[in-house]
Image 1 (cartoon, helix red, strand yellow):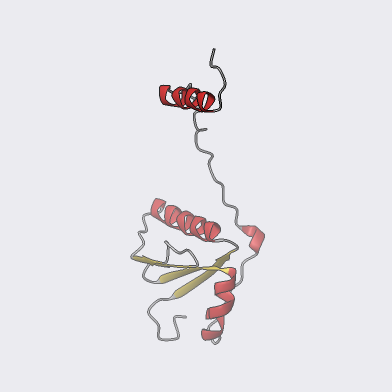
Image 2 (spheres, rainbow, N blue to C red):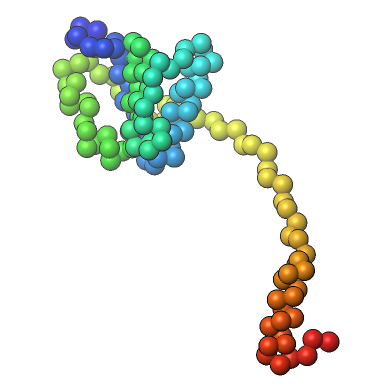
Length: 129
């Protein structure tokens, strides 16, 4: 895109199959570039996660939900720009499992609950011995 007047030198267009996946892709890109000392200048769409834009100045990353990518067709808009496709299976994301949540023991029935059971039993004419 350097030969065509634009606000950035590169567009990276990625898509995910769910909003959770779109958010995860965005988070992983931000995390990986932050580790290399690059900070995102501007980001949009993280709340809805149907189209997240990450602006790094010379590089702009568009992360789409598959349906949204098909609808807007950014590739058609920039059809005269050289493209490079990457294999879908070439990028693996490793997610670290967090600590398992602690199990909380159920509390014994409180005084109010026991009173309700006694009241219902008496109302029905049953003895509570």
